[in-house]
Length: 184
Image (cartoon, rainbow, N blue to C red; front, side, top):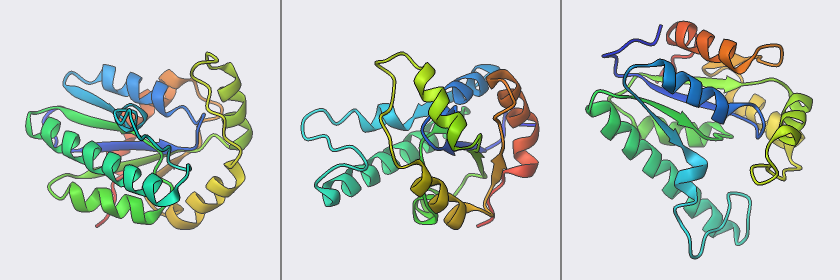
């Protein structure tokens, strides 16, 4: 169980529509001292000159993703040092980005959960969002294949299609410390 006083950093990732935002909010609310770190929010702190992760020019998009990753890790370290469990919500598509996080979180046990409800569930869930919150994304097959190829044996791949967000959050709190620990 994720308990108070542990130096854990929980990273919850998955494809757009997997349930990351809802689940990380619920997990963070269930812990007495936690901070939810939303990668989309941190990424949107760049106002002028913002390029989204798959945007053009590609080199600038990559630079901004790296900046966001650095900022998320800095915030996670600061919150953890202050006694809060950081709960990161962000798409981590490959081993290189996960290794970047691990390098910037050296004093933390990192718990890595991949929400994996399947492509169709992700597409469907996206249609249920408020229109202002929908994410137009047509790269599900590519992202799914990339994540499975590069991250398939890492952390806890959690099939959540048949679970409510509340059930998912409760299981993450109970099971992540034994199922999601990333070996360095």
